Length: 271
Image (tube, rainbow, N blue to C red; front, side, top):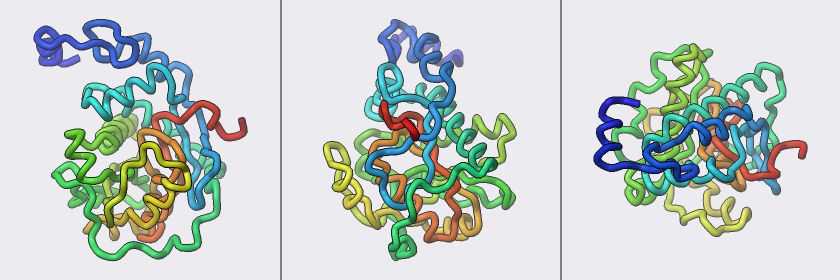
């Protein structure tokens, strides 16, 4: 922990987001719950939306992991981006290993409208952290691009930050530190307005985001011919990841898999 974080804790003490232990944003016991069990592995929603790539999760969406994701996303406990990003990095590593072994094939055939990319610039979330200028431009063709699922300007403004992008950035930093040939590219934005996904059925979620994602200005040339792993915080119905995969494929990218921090209990493939 940095010196200034100790100072903040003295002035504004926090409790563990996972279990409520005092004076620590993320305690050692909850950290072990997130990482010690190893990566959960390949997960699959039911029903599985067309075009969804193979998805890999670090942990089950329950208990401390669920509490931490909600605290980071909805309450802006930004110090959780580090451990959650590390968990996402673990899922990315497994996705890349599966690709090397030839076990990361798409879970469902692509939707036949996959090449109908939305026209016009993606709106996405405004702000410097979402820009793509220079991102991945200097990386080699063998470098895998980590592309986060986009959020709307409305949700970013309401939360005060872009949770998925923040986690993807932390994951990319971790992977670079391990010399994994991975680069962050926030390539996607929203081409049209969507409604809040909370409370929607799987069919409603799919309809809500269908055709809603588009490649941001300047990113199409960076995606073309490149291998991509999609990143998100949580797998629910898979609708957003399937739509993100469609948009990347329409721009000429190859989606080799998707990585999430957590997935619901019972969603592990083969169970």
